Amino acid sequence: MILTLHDNSGLLSEEKLSDLTKKNLHYLDSLDSLDWLMPLERDMLEACEWFGRVTSQDADVLIVIGVGGSNRAARAVYDCLGSKSGTQIEWVGLNYSAKEMNRLLERIRGKRVFVNVIAKNFKTLEPGLWFRVLRSWLREEYGDEEYNSHIICTGTPGSDLYELAQENGYIFVDFPEDVCGRYSAFTLVSLLPLAIAGLDIQEMINGANFMRTALEKADENNPALMLATARNYLYENGYKMEMLSFFEPSLERFSKWWTQLFAESEGKDGKGLYPVVGSFTEDLHSIGQYIQQGEPILYEIFLNVLSSEDRRIDLTDIPDGFEYLDGKTLNDVNKAAYRATLATHSKRFPCFEIDVVSLDEFVFGELFYFFMFTCCLSAKMLGVNPFDQPGVESYKEKTISDLKANI
Ligand code: PA5
Image (tube, rainbow, N blue to C red; front, side):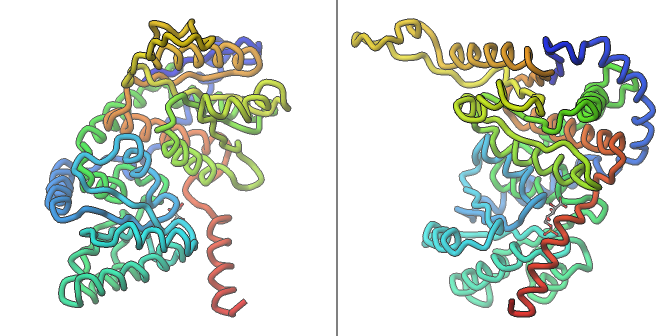
């Protein structure tokens, strides 16, 4: 992974960023205890891989129930790379939509189903409600004697979910107490569903370890320190939005993970950059206009995948006005659109380019680690606590108290 600054707007040169970053070196020491970000130990990983292999043999479908940080990292990887074991994952517990629920129950009819409910303390209503419905479905399908072996609970020991699992004989695995949802990419919260889908979780951890070593460098070339410094500098200079853009739509779920990470970690105390996403080229035909000529409140980070699958564009004997496509591939065109976008946008505001070699488990491990580390550093610079979400909690509590009061 390589981070490069492109700025022809005159606001932020490489020299300037390097000077600013040097002044922020001490922030690296403020992250003294990142033990919670340490990827799983090898024996736990092997146990997780084994459990994934065994479960996938009996499961056509794994239903993951969880909301927010309880599913976004795993879903980012799954939606991009797909299932390699044959077990398909359904992601639910994200809303109260009867339509979504009815459709899901239709889709799973006649299939062999396992459920992984993921909730840190099991107070959140969305996963609680979906778990109740799917528990009933499993009981009807497999009977009282067998249904419990189809339920895997991921929660904190001592929580309501833990008690429920103990009382009813569900499988229980740990959601580490010192890790909040949006930082759980390297815990069983994410790794267990990915292992069941046959994805290479060992490679994901290798990517995270590789990035961890790179970010230990205490100098002005540390890419996380550079980006965290730039974010805060641009924010202080009137930029209110940070946009993550990419030319590969299978990164859309990754961008949802990224959005949550920064919005929940930094958007508090009346402060914080608002994270937005550009899925290009589609969004160039909508928000692309605002980016180019609207109010100058955003700067951009491009996630650039250097090598991906390709396809030659068909030749045609029907003149269609696109003769300049002859002999080219889809990637030739996508890269041309990327270069043109970067060139035009960087005339207006600073743009960062993050190059990744390809899209695979290793790269996702690198990206998760890089952004989580950057986010913690950046929140320290901003002076906010990256690990709480009082705004989200107040919505949860109000909904529950209104329901209890029958409002
Ligand atoms: O990142 C977070 O901590 C939050 O987004 C939570 O993951 C989300 O609110 C769900 O909470 P819980 O796992 O307790 O159901």
